[in-house]
Length: 204
Image (cartoon, rainbow, N blue to C red; front, side, top):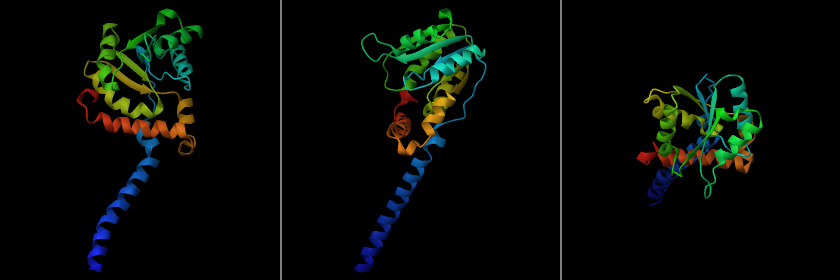
């Protein structure tokens, strides 16, 4: 009887221990799994999707524009309240920092359950303006997933696509990230979003 209990315990505990080790290893590997190398490819347009008051992406996008990486900037975001779009405010901020108004556009996106649901609209807007290449500036932890997901939407419509992010944002996000709540929250949150999107056809 004791032998049967021990065998049962081993059969249960060993898989649980392996699962726990796997989860811990996955957690510590999140930065390398989520953050892809940034690509700064000369493009027709910069798609600015890293809209956040805690991000240095605005400064980064302006630097890319001034270096001639792209001639146009499109700020993309969904509404957060009635007729309130962060992309409108970011456009005004970029203009106030010296970017010509005619070179900055605010693309108002509908509220959607996931990024994949609005990507066709972004691609349609890019094509409607005659642009053949786009550089998407996003948050560091979203870079690998965006590169995989969005690239399919853009390239099947003949639009070259690259993903980048602010080096300043990446450095800040990965510094002692396991000891800082908001950094861990963003890393784990992104991993959960990726996993959840796999279950819905409109999101992948």
